[in-house]
Length: 301
Image (cartoon, rainbow, N blue to C red; front, side, top):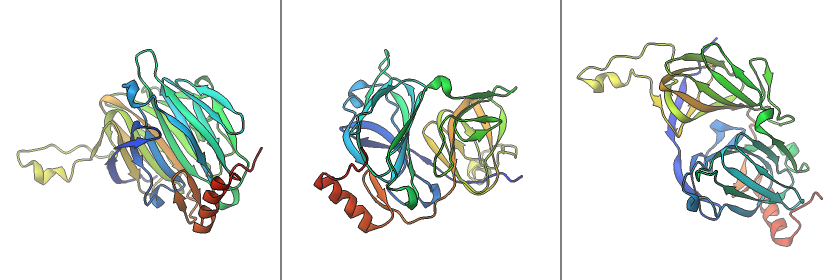
């Protein structure tokens, strides 16, 4: 077994999206080859209603899948095919945009004004770019939870993990999407197939990942000389991108650590991307925007 080294740790950056929603973007709209098949991860946790209530009014998608995971509050959604509903705390929506869909997502806070959640974009392979749109709406109670003797808990949204299978299925990239909590001071090893790209996104507590199997060095007065030997600590809104290996090791900090652990098989296909539409070639991308302008974007009824 080989521990995945950390390629880098970055902080999610403040970003304005939709009609003025303040969120943090962990990655997206740049060189995303290292995250392939994933394109973007937004953290829309907010406790100030005026910063999120404007929401994400009607907008198009083609060529991708969007995965919305709600922790607090609700997200009302509807689309051009007549689908409508609401996602509550713990719920997940896995939307395959395929050939094209117009939809809107309008967040609402809980009684304390909190709106917490994430949206992940996964690319579709060229063979499925123009597939029919579909939804998988998963209630929180349908997501299996694995609890270990040391208190580690894992919600399995998608993929197989520790004998449990997540309720989301039929996804092209065969992803694994986990919500992991490791208690204070606990060291935990989590398997991740070598063939996958993988990242962790921390949203509670802190911990270390790089060289996690080695003891933490002790700082002296000459801290600069020793800092390079200290495993970098990941905090709230830190994204940890892993290199190759078949397991991730995490040492939880004094408050424990909770994070998304996401992995998927790379598509290794060209990406032509503009806004909410992702195709393989510039010609396909231009055609998609022409379809939108001409009123022929929605091809499935």
